[in-house]
Image 1 (cartoon, rainbow, N blue to C red):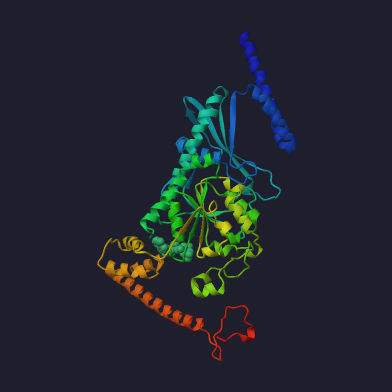
Image 2 (cartoon, helix red, strand yellow):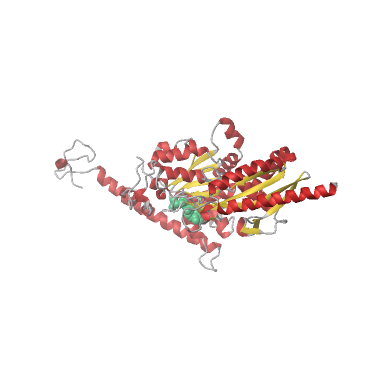
Length: 508
Ligand SMILES: Nc1ncnc2c1ncn2[C@@H]1O[C@H](COP(=O)(O)OP(=O)(O)OP(=O)(O)O)[C@@H](O)[C@H]1O
Ligand SMILES: [Mg+2]
């Protein structure tokens, strides 16, 4: 009797379920989106009374969708390391140093994980949002991971399990990630959904502080400063300051400013965001770029004096960053065009840049260095480089003997040589950039040994010495003539006195 009743019960339940499924299929197929949403909502409510499982979603982009969710990235990394053995469909991507492959779950793949004897299930999924256009576009995809577990383990899973997933995921990401060099391409379109405003390539610069030609003490001081910064999360939180630090690198061309940025990134394992200020449309776009940078990164603005003038007005297209006079003194300066293509419509102002560095938005993300480089530190607005914005000012200068020894070790693999004495004497009295010293030390043929390269450097130093002496003589001569200007009638006159009427001034 009981058996018959049970059979009837199962049959009734089965047919009810079948009817419900049929009804649901019709609704899905023919009803408008709003009606479907309505049914979905109430079906979920009814189901939740009987369904013993809890589900948590981790979406790739949240809220205003400006930034990829950190939780999503951590889950992705965790799953790639912990479940790639059990998943059947995987995606492959190049890992760190392009030497290993990183495998992650493919879309709609389902895997099981276990924590303290409790089973949980992860599914990677995506929804495609309704588009206005007829064409299918990848930009409308919303990816997410869904975690499912029994409701009796709610506390364990939402507490210690998720903590464990996020912590481990973050560590794996740091271990596996390829460091990137980002740039904001000129004319890049406003991000429509999940595209970022930065494009990137893998960062593979080989420079390190070991290969940087610089006095040992100064180098150690900078390394110490950087390492202290990277370990000071709690300190910055305690003093109520955003976890970021500004560095101003200044000095003549070829003294190693860009090389030092690469060495900094390699020392700390940070990404590099090379910000081309002249390609930024306005302050709002600048802020968007800032928000999109991740932590553990260096934001670099090279040749800051060329990007923005001191009044906050952008330079016009084609205008040179240095005036004619300084260009004459330093032909290198002329090479730096103020603006690239597309800058004519740029409206980034000095105040926009100041806000970028330490405005309220600059705190988002944390653990970031902002580095400015310039050849002309004296041209910069003091507000831009005051402590708090540019906390550490580092001067990179002409090659010292100590710097030369680093280069000799790098290029020729020698630590001492009889010719070092001559080089020491010359290098201490002559201004030669590390870039020039390095170029002279570079073997030019397979037959070039250390002695040949060092002799070439000595020759170059002597040549520079002679040129410097000639210039000094000419300048002294000019100075002599210009300081005692004489009128035709034999009287002395003063060029600089404003009071002298133009017609009374002497002709040079
Ligand atoms: N201090 C240095 N140590 C080691 N190599 C250096 C150093 N300075 C310059 N060099 C060499 O010279 C080249 C040019 O240096 P770098 O681009 O870093 O100069 P810079 O100061 O950034 O110049 P600019 O002001 O023109 O941008 C580098 O490729 C590097 O090989
Ligand atoms: Mg440079």
